Length: 328
Ligand code: GLY
Image (cartoon, rainbow, N blue to C red; front, side):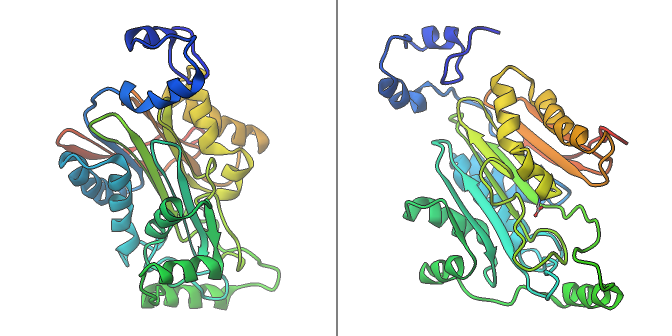
C-alpha cells in the first residue's frame, strides 16, 4: 500500500489524478468529487430485513440515483414494515409502552443529520435527512424533533401495533421490582451503506432501540460515529446490536479509521469488535455487529456472537449472508 495523505488517498492516486501534494488544501477539497471513479453500485445492510431494503436501494442506484437517495429509500422499507419489531412502525416500545425511534443519515460530503427519541413519526430517517439538509444542526431529539417533523409535513401516527403492544403487556406482567431493562435482545437495527455509480458513498441507520428500555434511553443508532460513519475517501461503516457498547468505542468511526490505516473492511470490523470483547474480559453477554464498505467496493462484516446476518447487493445479486461470531 502506498503512502497515505491526510485526505486518505494514496500518494500515487494524487499523481494519477493530476493532483500534487503542494496544492492548497482548499483546492484539494474542491476536487474530491471529481476524483471519484465510476463504480458498480453496491449496497450492504444488516439483518434479514436488509434484503428488501437493499432491493429498494438498488432500484434507486440502477436508475442512476445517488447513494444518499438509495440509503434513505432502502431503510424506509424497514421503517414502514409493521412486522419488523425493531425499526419504525411496529417497533417494540419502551418500558412505558411508547415507541421511540432513533435514526441518522450521512452523505458523501460528510454532511449528517440525526433524530433521537422521536415519537409518532414513521420515517425518522427522512426527518434526519431534513435536519441535515434544511438546518445547520446535526441532531434533534424528542418533542423538538417531532415538532420539526410535523412542520415539514410528516404525518403523526400511532406506531404501536397490536402485536408489539401484546408482547409489551406480557413482558410487563413478568417484570420484577428491580428490573430496569428489557430482555437481552439483539434488536436488529438496520444500518445500510451504499455506493452509487459515480463512486459516492452514503449511509443510514434506523431503529426503535432496545426493547422495553428505560424511557429516554437513546442508543448508538442516531449518534454520528457510533451507529454510522461515512468518509467518502475511505469508506463507510454501520453498527447493530448493543448500542451502549458501540457508543463507548465510537464503533463506526473506529471501523472507518482502521480502514484508513490500511485494515481491510473485514479486519477493521473484527478489530473494532475486539476492543469491545477485550473490555468485557473476552466474553461479552451481548451482540454487536459491524458492516463496512470501502471506497473501492470491498466489504466487510463481523459480529461478536453467532446469529448475525447481512444482506449484500451488487449486480443482479441480492443475498443474505450468515456471519460466524468471533466468540461463538
Ligand atoms: N443498536 C441500536 C440500539 O442500541 O439502540
